[in-house]
Image (cartoon, rainbow, N blue to C red; front, side, top):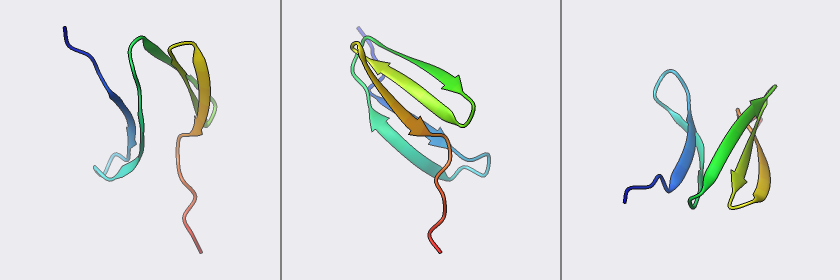
Length: 54
């Protein structure tokens, strides 16, 4: 049985923005600038893009 264990966001330039550990069963929903991960019934919300430090 295969399973995805990491959910990640990447820029179109190939730069990794962030990633999160996921454990099956999991699902996601994109809402505006957020991605909502449902990992084994536990909801977590992340920003799609990180703000750069000034």
